[in-house]
Image (cartoon, rainbow, N blue to C red; front, side, top):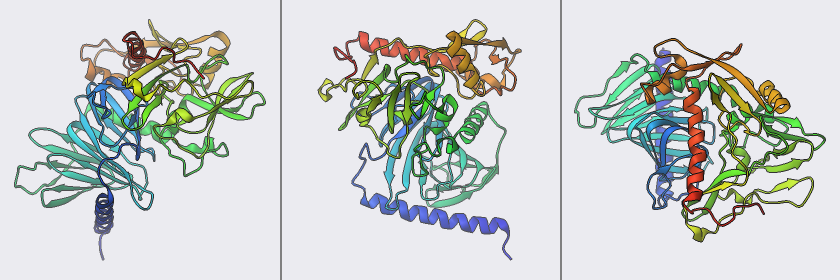
Length: 475
């Protein structure tokens, strides 16, 4: 009788064989990189992160919610980044990492094919349970094919690269040698070495493992789309962005206008298109990029409605608009429909065009407090750090702001600021939320909020440089 491990190995071998055949078939039918076939989401940016969007400008400052197309390159300096895929799978880049999105395609069965080339540094990848989707990582030392639900760390660098498997399994190919790496194993890859790779026990965790685990837990907790049931989102709707929608807002019957999703910390005066960026993409033109941490799905699907007693709210549907998302209509209950900010002419050819028709409002750290500000709509609020945001939002609506006390942690590295310690080793002690039931995450307050401040300054500098059109007003 075959052991369970033997059966598992045989099952995974069949999966990886099917993956290879399917990928080869798709590749033979592909005429080369075609940006726009699929887009994936740059879902989190913290610190120095840059993206090459293939428009002849090379690497430029990256912002959350920028679409990533086939062939684009993403790199981190003194910063970290996260990328979300359609099924809520995700990839995280630690500092000094560079990744090329070599292939973002679809196969004949409707599944996705994602191939990322890790040029240097370290990435974490956590896959959803999507057997029809194919995910591969390539490098100069060898290539990896990932099984569904796999969760791995892949390091590329001298003198050799390595893959650590936390969950699932990976098929590693080094030259002509193929090795199956199972859960809780590590494999060293070295293309220049004639030695046969050997699976090794996973070594001690590093500080970025904590950040990765916290991020995975966040998506698992908030990705559940049950709150969207009956509100226009079906199982066929892309899942990326749903975690942030569930955390940063909720559905409610907006004053007799019907069910709409609204972000927390937003009054009736707040405008979803009041701040943002037009990002240029070759062959397509300009794509709208929202600054809000939840600002992906509501700007690529559904419609925005205005209810006089509540303000702007989003109604989902089962459509998805890619780069050309300027066509999303908004339908106020009073007055004629309009279409967000005015789309710049393609001839403008500016890489990034800032839109600021209202002041950019941020929630942020002030002394030893975190201040939630009305009409920030979640901008500046770190993921998951404060638990449920509903009560804080209600307090903000009543008083214009809400304050949560912070206290300094003791000396030495703390679980709440492993990213801050890594990015700025000389940084002072971390600040934690002094709130009952709060489970601190690995992202620091100062690190998380400074990114959004830099983003707003970036928009201001874009306008000052003359890259904005004479008027970026609404229709």
